[in-house]
Length: 122
Image (cartoon, rainbow, N blue to C red):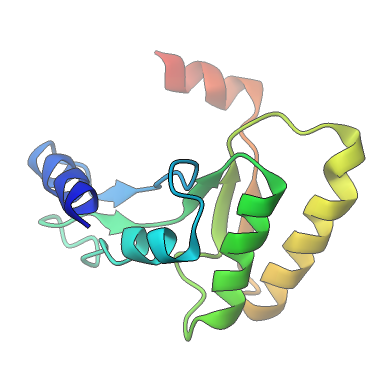
């Protein structure tokens, strides 16, 4: 909780209004819920958690589970796959996308393309 609070404070102090935390470090539902609780509505004074970054299929399934279990699917319904995906994993990723869009029709499961990656490195 202290680390999440520190991230929020640093983000807000530097004018960041939207956060997309990575679940890689803790890999737990509890940690993801704590990260999601950082949102302050994007009012300019507090950062809003707008989604999550995942690197593995189990992490993806965990965030989709949270979208399915929560009263509101946000911010669990906007997930960025932070690593390249091989063809053998596409059917499992599509299965998770279908699950997510059942509870959040506007849910997004994304993977950055080369141009997005290059922009992020500048």
